[in-house]
Length: 220
Length: 135
Length: 198
View 1 (cartoon, rainbow over the protein chains, first blue to last red):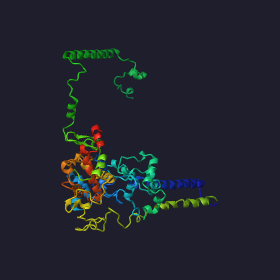
View 2 (spheres, chains in turn brown, red, green):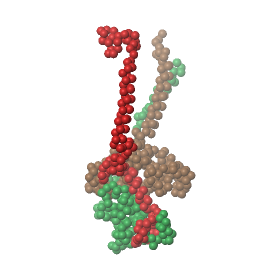
View 3 (cartoon, chains in turn yellow, brown, green):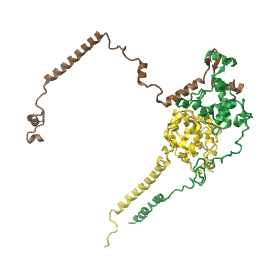
């Protein structure tokens, strides 16, 4: 009589380990998806360090400066534009002229070197986003950039997944607002009834025939 | 328990009570009542004294004549200007509201000289008619 | 023991999906070997991908010293009217209002009285437009100041297009009129409203 290779409980162990391994795999996949969607991976809501501790909150909520004062190409170019050092110095040649926090600005102005900001909204190189067309069609700054007037340190408000872009491109009415409210950071898109927003989509001639979801709309 | 050993009894507890498990001696009521009555009497006496003092100085409790006027009190609390800005949002909103009000409505600037202010929307219409040459 | 064999095979296969963890992501499509605006560069010495003009040069069609549209001057004299390329209409003034409120109002105030939010805070003094000197000043002067700056004010020629700057200076005229209108020159219905004080 030869010795048994497997003990009596081998079958039970096998079944239990099958269940455990299946659960483990599902758990790992779920955890990876969760990680992929979390701010840890997307950086949404995570402020980045910048060479100058610039506060959007102070300049917008306290000082009532329009977005365009600094991001002055936003209405006519693809990029909203980082403000030139000259733009900072328009005021800061006279206000806070000795502040050590603004030393990088003065250095940049005197030495003709750029201030290197850390990009917050960093799209992949194969995405061609154009600010001016969104502004012209009634998409407000805060729709993508969030409540910027509350951000002492600037952070991404959206994870920038493609599905989020497509959500609006499929149904622009959910995020549209009147053109004169585009730069109003306190405007609530939902304060306008859906029917009127749908009318805006027609008035602003936003194509709803599916052209907006074509690949080449954003990828070239 | 130490009480069973060398007679180091707990302070204030006699061995009999400890043996029985509850206190055998009642509280002494006399001093307590006396203290309570004394407090009441003291309260009455102080009311009477206060009444006498107030009456003799001719004042009433509701009299506020010796208080500082509100504005003076405010000025004493707030240091003289220029001050640090307390709330930049409120100040900013106020400036915007003032300017917006200036640009709305009709009114006299100088009635003697016949100078008025008119709403900005109307001024824009008039500039379209009159041109931008200025006065 | 017959069913134990497929189970054993399964147990071995069940680890395979974990190999996915060993895979890596390509980022060469995300960060392509090309420059988009405002990107840093390790190719150019000054670290900028966006190139500044070579010294003593201008971009084509950007230097028009003789054009009133670009300078606010004709033959060296400040123009007293809008250049022919700009049409004075309600749209121009509406645009001027928007641009004025965005770029000028922080210091000059929404009403153009020099009481902007920024001017209120700092040592900055913004002049009011509501003075006799500026009411009678040629319109080209405002354009010149908006373009090149004056005193401590920086020029906005690089930030605001020439068309928008003309819209702004036309709107400044509307601001001046709104705060200083001669009642006798107003249409009768406006005179009535002034009398009513509405």
